[in-house]
Image (tube, rainbow, N blue to C red):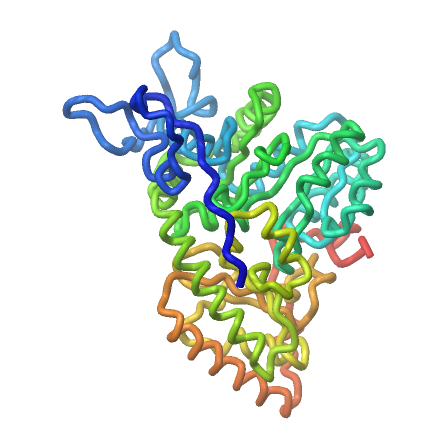
Length: 421
């Protein structure tokens, strides 16, 4: 596997020694950014501030306007991404703020091959004319740039969830800007330690901080990071008007989790590379998508714009939905769950959810955690043996075809069940 490029340096944060003109690495910045000023007997970490009411006279009139714990998280994430950060109650709240800040009837170009929740949200507003939505394959650069003619906003996801496609960010951003569109990049899969879209020209970055940023499967949080205050102000207004701010305890936990992002991500990524290598050679695996492979169709794209290849693997089990579902349910160490980015490894068959009609039925999304890679492989090999045996037995409808209720799904939405095809 090709060696990833060196980590991107960042600007020294305020308060760094004036005689040290070398920027800190991101691995250092993630540990120190957003901490309180150094003072005798001062706390090293930002305390959790529980407050709904503030003394009058300052810029924060009410708890929907701000919180000191928010400030610490936002300073840290902003330093990593290179912009002005805002935290939200969830990743979907952050995405919703981006779309709600647009004028009525704005044309939005969004990925058909990305997170279903984003499509479902856009699908709620499209029938009423709130947005004019153009769904595209963001891995197809020419198609996506062409769709930006007359568009207000291009929303990109890279790598895509769950298929691990890589969009050519530099080309898409330049093409969209040339056509007058604002560009937003969902950086949840990569994190700023592996990809910095603002440095590539994007206007806004969004995160589900629930995932890798917090990293412990105990927080629901989202974030935006804007290039400048002009781009940030409408998002801040949407957060306040809609009451979409997070609780201070959730924000504190996300910040504490983010302090270990560099070491967690290094371990998860190393595990992912090894598991992907073994999956490729397994007889019961039909295909594997991991951008770290030199023969992955999007490896060169990832190598050019990322500082590593991440912890996410997409692989298809031979035989389709029934064997894949059997494998997901057969694991003993790997958790069968629908989130990602925690220190524990999780896996699920994404096509079981409404809105995932374009996802191959036998595809499993594997979020690789920090466990011993040998233990993880033994569990995967066991699950694949179960998958192979299921191909010789009649299908079990309740395992494969029963669709859990997705709170984002709306049966009448034209985007909810593959109508975008």
